[in-house]
Structure formats: structure tokens, C-alpha cells
Image 1 (tube, protein in one colour):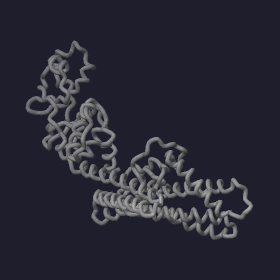
Image 2 (cartoon, rainbow, N blue to C red):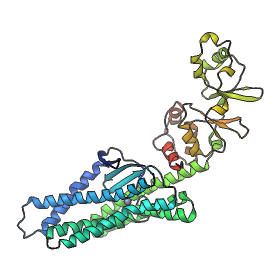
Image 3 (cartoon, protein in one colour):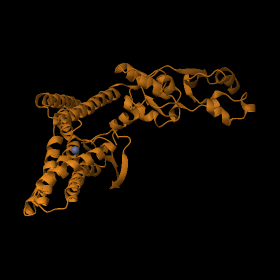
Image 4 (tube, rainbow, N blue to C red):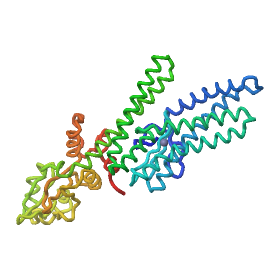
Length: 409
Ligand SMILES: [Zn+2]
């Protein structure tokens, strides 16, 4: 499994090749459960043998740790291939349903993306083969034979389960890469794979419920639970792909506002202070003269000029010419606008027309408003005001992170 969203409240237990390793508390429950389950089975296998009573618990625990190592190696498979493509791996987390490697960005080509996706199940298959061979080699030691064959089998199931073709499973990543390769459209691949994941999740939920109702077997509840997890994550990927499409298709022109003021460049700083600093305008100020934009006026610059000089100096003395400030063209895609906005200290980003005039300004709140309107997202009360006054994007719209996924490195 591979996931971008980093889980919170996980414990860091170390690192491998500078990749931080986390364990989610839910994994401890699994450790305990699997130890107990295996201990029971080992006990059953050992009937008649003269083994000490603690041995079955110990073997059960050992099997749980081997499972832990198997999942970890599976995730390392994904991670090492990602690293070989120059993609940073943010973390590996082990949790209730297995493991996740969180990688920083998408591969550049569908083939590279496919390689990362396949690497995990390939590791599991190799583990299955080698543990099986090892198990066969120690057939005369029943206990070790049992342990090795059992862990081998688990690795086989791990490989099979993961290639189910739907996000967030590896099979979903494979499907995405294939559709991406065929259509040349990465987002179409992601959309298909996340839709497929939603369908797989629904099948899992229904099949599980069906089993519970029909046979009373509580294993069905587990299947439903896994189905629900897949559905939930596939839906998140679906939202992500839609958001990514929006950030690619919307442009600076569709987000910008006219929330700026044009001032005569020959105004003295004294006049400017009297009129605007005392009753400040929330947008941006630009100075013009002779029908031309002279530049951006930053009121904060006044602090560096002695008060006594305010009457003698004009806005022209403090303007920042448009070609020296950070700006975007009207046709800049929104993901680029978000990236640029993150690098500047001004709240408003200047949008320039092809003629080099100020076409509009954009702040974070303008972007959130446009996205919310496009996707029918209900914003929390006061959210826009909070963002206007320098707040970050809301946690349910992680626009900076999503924009980064679209930026080619
Ligand atoms: Zn995987």
C-alpha cells in the first residue's frame, strides 16, 4: 500500500536509509491479536510434544514479528524504487491493515510509477518463495517448518491482496500507471483507479456483511471493515484527483480580484499616510503616472523613512517596479499560483496582463473561495476572514501540498 497522507499520532521507532519508521497504535492491537492467534495454532500443532508451556506464546510472538518484518520489507520495496527515481520517501508507517510508504511526489512517467507500485508485491512474492523453500528444507523440524510455511503463506496473501486493482492498494497504482500510459493522462489514470477502489471497497463491505448474515462468521465483519477502509481512501483519492484537475485547469485570471487601489505616483508620502494608512485599504496599492504602472507600494516601507521626509518624498521614491516584484501572468495555472503565493511575504500576489499592466491580485482566500464554489464545498463560518488575515489553507483543502504534487521537479 502507498499513501500520501501521513498518519498522525504514530510512534517513531527508528529509520532506515533516512526514512523515518512509524508504528500506529492500532498496530499494537494487531501484534497482540496475531501473537495470541498464532500461539493457539502452535499449541495445536505441538500437541503430544514435550515442550514448555511458554514456547507456544513465544513462537506466536515470533510469527507476529516475522509478519511485521514482511510488511516492512514490502514497504521498503516501494520506497527503495522511489528513492532510485530521486523521489523522497517521507515515512513508512505500520498500522492496522498493514503498512504504508508515504512518498513525496508522483513519478515523472507511467513506467516509473508502475515500477514503484509493483516493487512491494514483488518483494512479498520473493519472501513467499524463499520462506517456502526454507520451510521445506526444515521439514524434519515440525515447529520451524510450521512457522516458516505459515509466514510464507501470509506473504503470498499480502502480494495477492495488494494487487486488487483499486486505490489505495498497489493494484490501484498499477491500474493508474497503465491508464496513464495508454491515455497519456495521469489524472485520468488516478480517477479510474480511485473509482475502481470505491467499487472494490463496496464489494468488500457487501461481501463481508453477506458472510456475517449468511454464516454468522465474524471474519466477514473484518472483510467489511477492510472494504470500508479501501472505500474511504479511494474516495479521498477521487477528491484529490478532482482537486488536481481544478488546479491544472483554473487560471490566475479565474481567481483574481480587483481588490487593489491605483494611486497617483506623484502623491507625497504625507498625503498617502493621511488618506490610506489611517484608513487602510486591505488590498494592494499600485502607483501610476503618465498612463503607466510605476510599481507596487508597500506601506510597510514607510517605517524606514524618517517622518520629516514624508512631505518631500513621493510614492515614486518607494515604489517597487512591476518587473522587480514576484508576479504571475493571467494564464498561469492555479497550482503554479499557489506555489508562487507560498514563496512571497506579501499577502496579495500581482497578476499581470500580457501588456504588463496589473490585471488583478490574488490572495489565499480568493483561491479557497473559487475552489469551494467549484466543488460545492461548504466553508466553515469565518474561514475566509481567517485566511484573509494571514491564515493558512484549511486542513480539508491542503492546497499547498496538492499544488506541490503537480509541480515537476
Ligand atoms: Zn504495497
